[in-house]
Amino acid sequence: GSAVGAGGRVEERGDGEGAWRRLGFGNTRRRVQRAADCAVHWYGEVQEFFVRTPCRALDRMVFLVEDETGDIVVVSVAWVQMRGSRPARQLRALADDFGTGNVSPIGMAALELADVPFTGRYYESRRQVSMVVIAEAEPVRGLPDAAVLDGLTQVAVLLPRP
Image 1: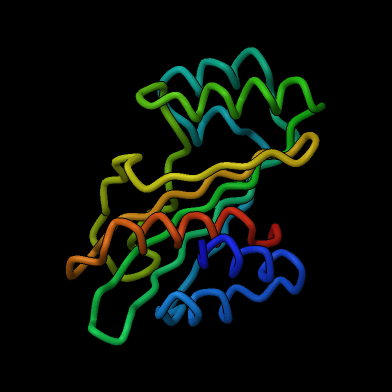
Image 2: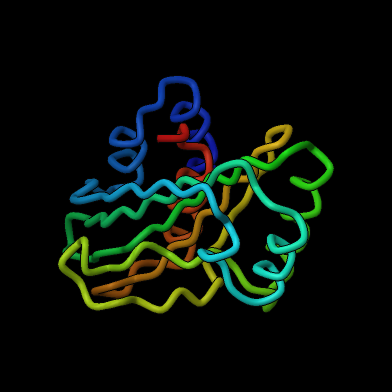
């Protein structure tokens, strides 16, 4: 769909702002956090995976985006650099399996919001050799369409690593 097309342009130019605008959202605020230890930033079976299979690096970003009608959505993105393509494939398969755990998003206090629980309903992932990118979205205010929320994750998963 159009979200995937917008996402392709994001990857080519690194233009997150333009991609949000094409979906009708403005990027209002964001925060980035880097870590060397993956296990402490994940939960569930995925955390157990990282105890056995350490990552090289983890970058997390959280965006707060708003559309012209006042709907606000928080988008969480994690870039996980693994030590090879095999552990990256294993991580993606595990994280894509609903209910096995995922990355803990950066605290919403950084965006002057109360914590928003991520349900995993609006989720997208991709793998590029030894890097896995995971994006989730949740509405904060208003009732954005489910297809729009899915589109936001499809764009976010293609953003360049910060």
